[in-house]
Length: 131
View 1: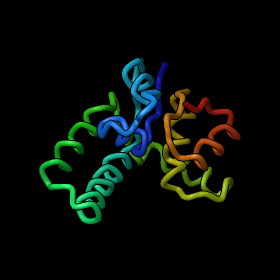
View 2: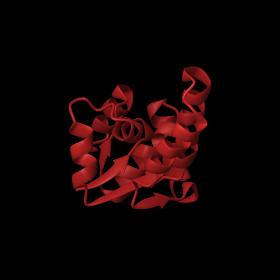
View 3: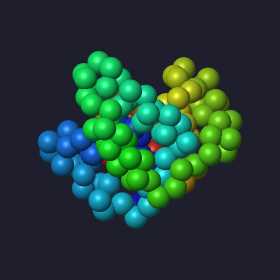
View 4: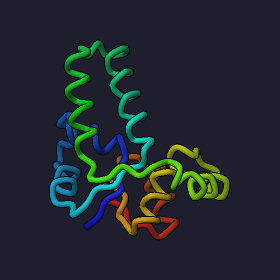
């Protein structure tokens, strides 16, 4: 199965936050994992916040960040997705950032792997398989 992976699921995977190991199984058994280019920036921001707000060391943050960014098989350029993401954001009244993940899942006929409840609901409304 092909996956469109979002940052919160990827971070949970590398930091061992998936107590039920459901995310782990999907990532480890995926045929191919896509992420939008935005994934890089969001990953950096997550670990910046963990460093600043939870005093996670720079070294630890950098190691986790490298592991997250090593997960995807393909990083899809924002220039390819922005038009679809923009259209979805205006139609669904939701942030364009999140819509890059939906646009990617739709474009690649991939299931969306996320921990974001709102994003899951929007994906289901669009007929995108959600894990």
